[in-house]
Image 1 (tube, rainbow, N blue to C red):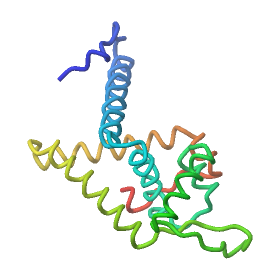
Image 2: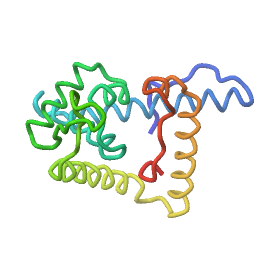
Image 3: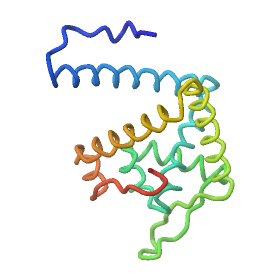
Length: 178
């Protein structure tokens, strides 16, 4: 299905044409992902806020306990927005604050077993959607696409030093990222 909003202008030739087409497809992907997020948050504004807060469970689980300010930098969000989300997560028992080992005056955020259960449910929902979307793909097609997507995300990360600068170092790649 073509996306009328992505009707490209005249494409350049050669390698520039490939970059132009990739740019168009990434813009389309961005719009589709935005629509998916909007449909997931189609309930009340409270449900949408809760779903947005739940997204913070991913980096906290992947990277381990961290200070709230570091989390805000990592997800490139306003500290006050992250603060509201963290308050909701703490109130729901999905995250707890623990004293920082190096500086007891500040706390680090730790995902609780209840938070891990919510994260597992979110992963299952995402994986069910992706399984449905790729149901007609051969195992080779899916493996090839996954490998190329991983390479693209890695290379894109390497070319966006501002992401690493926001937290003082390159974005870490963990086994869960692979």
